[in-house]
Image (cartoon, rainbow, N blue to C red; front, side, top):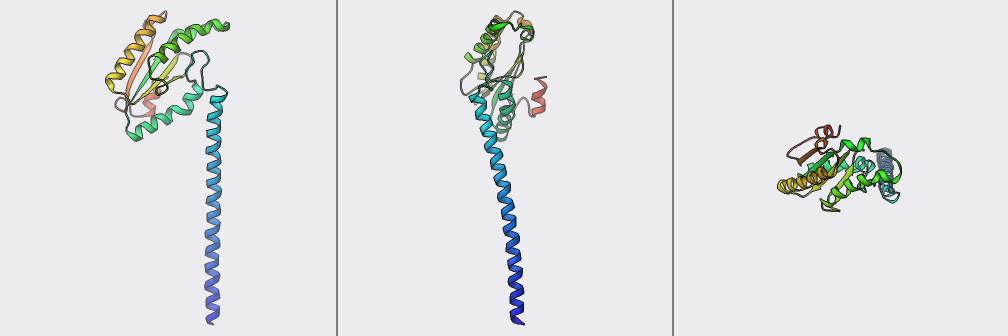
Length: 190
């Protein structure tokens, strides 16, 4: 009788261990799948640089593909860590009507890219082309006063370059102070 009880206990323990082992195997499979997804995402991200998908060829700033991959991750991380940073959104409507005839169309766009690049701290600051007419500049680790100075320089130089300076829309935000949600920020890209 005593042996039967021990055998029953051992069988129960064995079944519990099998269940735990099965749970462990499932967790390992899930972990492996997540790891594979992360590796593929990282590989895709690196391939974007290799095949130049993340560079806008007309302005030589980061492209919309790069914006889509990194922008909200940057915002989320900055908000979580409580870091202050600047966000500048520039809309240049005259780019919409730029005629795409050979390499000649790139000259004004390249100049706009140059103006933006020359006024920030590369590679720390990130300039991205959101659309044909809209650019975003993310400037980490900056004071509100410095952000204002950079914004003034960029708007001054762009207004001296474009044909219709009064049509440029220019938004400067000191985050997270000025805006608190990605929905708020997205409204300015519409």
